[in-house]
Image 1 (cartoon, rainbow, N blue to C red):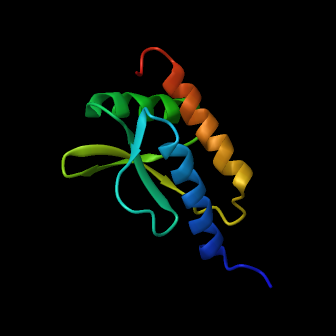
Image 2 (tube, helix red, strand yellow):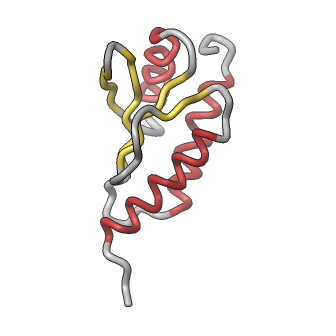
Length: 105
């Protein structure tokens, strides 16, 4: 029996949530109930804005921002039809590498 895509997208989003929560530089904002994870660097909004710009400018990933109660967050959406766990690890590796650059943190 095949798992419906929406269920596997939720599982992949939960996997991403675990990766974010395992890195003390980041925090997840809000509950992960569908295929969307809102996260940010801990600290001021500017650092998260800089990080998102670097990620998007790299051409390796594209994510969009949101503001939740004046808190700037990055929206990571699992929505590709054939998304798999490898895609989640790839995305996290890109995000982590961009964060490791000295001008972000």
